Picture 1 (cartoon, helix red, strand yellow):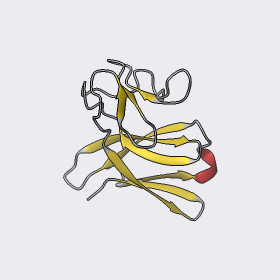
Picture 2 (tube, rainbow, N blue to C red; picture 1 turned 30 degrees about the vertical axis):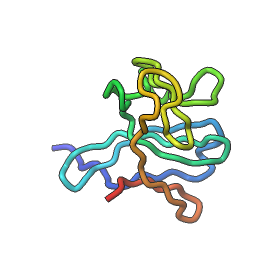
Picture 3 (spheres, rainbow, N blue to C red; picture 1 turned 90 degrees about the vertical axis):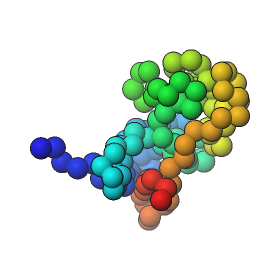
Amino acid sequence: MSDPVPAVWSCPVDALGPGETAVFQLGRPDGRVVRGFIVNHRGEIRAYVNHCPHAGTPLDLWPNEFYTEDREHLICATHGAVFHPVTGVCVEGPCPGALLDWLIVRRDGDRLVVSCPP
């Protein structure tokens, strides 16, 4: 039997520099696992569920590769939907206006802590 997936994920604040992302998994009380990612876009920290609202697939075809080549937006590798990294809004591609599902990010001392919304 495998260990349960924790309900929160954390990392040191300085481990996620501008333009960097990290992937993780969160366990929900019902036993489901949420795959997510955190992004530092010019000092703005956001976390999202790794699930494209258009295709239903993970955004990163290559592990932990979420940014467009110019590092200005997030992109779904499956169908090319482009999302604003701070708002999660699709700004280009097959689902304009659609939103990435957000996760809660808080700072606890020198750590970033991510959890699912209630």
